Length: 330
Image (cartoon, rainbow, N blue to C red):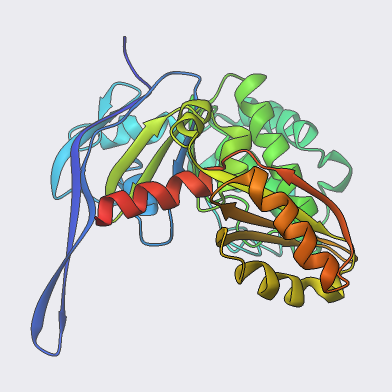
């Protein structure tokens, strides 16, 4: 089987000097991954994990120190021009800085189509189709400077598709977006994968969106792959992790509730806090959820904190990442 992307001990080492002392940083450390054609593939990890460096090597923007990779069957070192012809790259950035703000969306796409050597007649048809697909037809004559951030992201996605590449590298495309724009961007990416059959390599530090979008996930830490599996398989790794969610009715009680819950002996740690305008959800890792639920209810009741619900919680990718990270450090 020929893969859309395949890496072979791909490694990138950076050298720097601080105070006359040479420092070596292994940004990507002997990475071996295989991405199937048509797959929505996720790269997950914290800042500094090596995700962006890996993508830049695959896009032939930087050369590897060791190893190589194939993109659409072409070697990134020996055949960089062929690699570039079959991929689209989107680097997450707030405000759409890579667009020309004093041009319209339509003229931006015409300019980039020219740079990518798309024949004029094909470019015009493709631009119209992309503007329609991304819901920009009505505003195609407006200057990009007058677009919302979400609209600029849609123009950048359209730009990545101008030469109709089979493979898309999406490097944190939702970073800096508001909630509504992020949801819309995820919807568009899913449509590109399911409706147009694009292979998508998607990097993010947002565990929720990776779990929502990706068929398979690679987790990276310190430049190395620490897990490679579908989300369902990764969750199976943590069947022993017990967690509960507590829904606090009034947000003003949140800090008191967290302090009280953290002090319970049965609570290992506060995993996540989701705060909304009037309520909040606190997710806790516990020793035993059946013992924890009445203990939590009793403590909050005694403090007069109003609770809407307390329920068991399935393990998340964040739980998995924390566990794997601890195992790597042990």
